[in-house]
Image 1 (cartoon, one colour):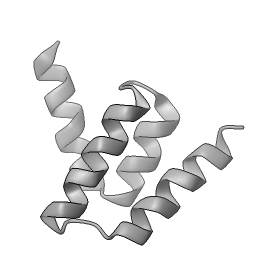
Image 2 (cartoon, rainbow, N blue to C red; image 1 turned 135 degrees about the horizontal axis):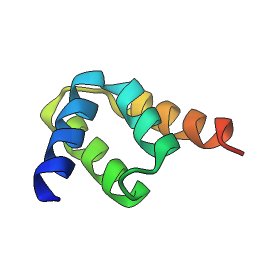
Image 3 (cartoon, rainbow, N blue to C red; image 1 turned 45 degrees about the vertical axis):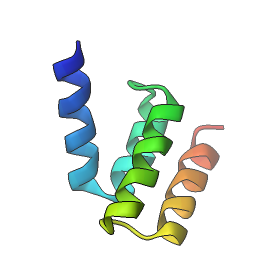
Image 4 (cartoon, helix red, strand yellow; image 1 turned 180 degrees about the vertical axis):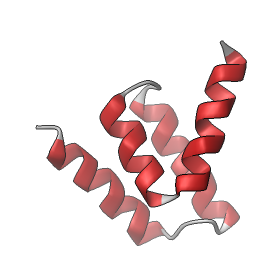
Length: 64
């Protein structure tokens, strides 16, 4: 199970902002993990803070 989660997180990293939105919409992994990993990607410089907020907000808006 751990290998699957690692693979999904790497896939989400490669997708960037869209990966955050997809991860939150599909709920394969709990949203707390996806958002925490999004914060990690911000620290690494792979994505920007404002873009991550917009991606998380839009995925929540689309699923209502």
